[in-house]
Length: 182
Image (cartoon, rainbow, N blue to C red; front, side, top):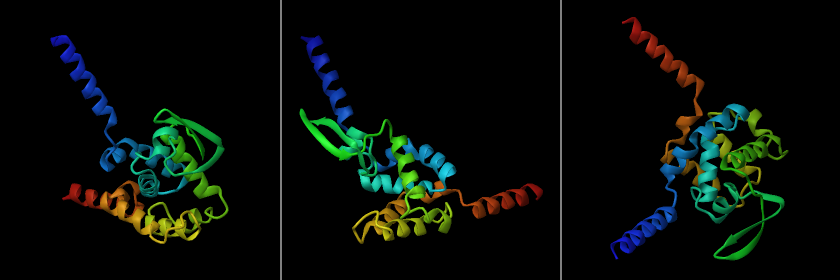
């Protein structure tokens, strides 16, 4: 009897742990390094990659994020199939092997698709405000509140700290040098 109760408790705790949703902070912690790496490869700010992904996927809790690793609601890819509540779901959304692959595709869209490709020339990788407004202006989302919502996430969670503004780094380096000389 004791073994049965113990097994039941362990099983229940395992199910509860697996059913927990990502929090914003856990999502950031888990994927910030991927966003920074993509920023260095493409010039798309890490804050934009994370902010848009958090907004579009509900911090990785959306059905698309959970079943297709699709953090941005990107359509295409020949129709992915997944199961939800034991029902087969056919989707027009793209399936990715990993969240990192989803981040890479978003950056590719932002730098290679004609409607967005000029953003990388117009904005630096630390001008997250310009990127957010530019992405909305060029038709990424139909909501007029989209950029304000993404910017709200970036500011609330200070995602801009991942963008590595060279002017700030130079200022910090100068301050460190002055402190060492004194």
